[in-house]
Image (tube, rainbow, N blue to C red; front, side):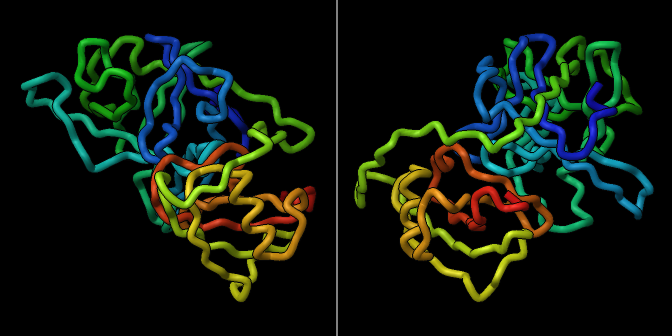
Length: 270
């Protein structure tokens, strides 16, 4: 079960009701349910922490695709049209402070095959019924002190993914056409790190990047750093407390600025 998996284990979370997976949307913000098992957006890495102020262990779910964390939103919606009962959405957020609560989760066994995932607020992660406005989304509802029978919508299969012996190959087109119009532009703040992951703040630079092609961004930064493109790995970090995540698919389809940490490929920290 997921509650026994170690720190940094890779998992997929499959909902029992629909057989669909928790999915980090390509917009870099939403979290939805999709049946596409064989894609990086359904992969999450466990980030275990001990909160000394509570003397409790928690799990954070970090997207292997975009490096952001499964987060409880303050935004609420009615569970059914016109219904007074409100639910909280989930989204891809940042882990900015050690005392941050909205990214904290607990996995508990429901039976030999399935788990229930609680937020730190003691509320439960569930899928939406097919007749809801929010169908295809995952949200947080209820609490363990006022139990409600949500059926199998709160049951998740935590599928462990074996770690590859080598970094994954970037399966992208060999050519990304250079464009300056018709595509989103975003600011890229980049910094170089050494072989142990220590970032040199003096290496900080900025670059206006168009589009979302990872190969093009890697080529641009390699040129700026005067290094071969195939010798660097680009990583993101979602917040000051977030862990580095190597980028192996195209950037999210938004125009938000991104902080990129550049590592040497095949270095100890890569």
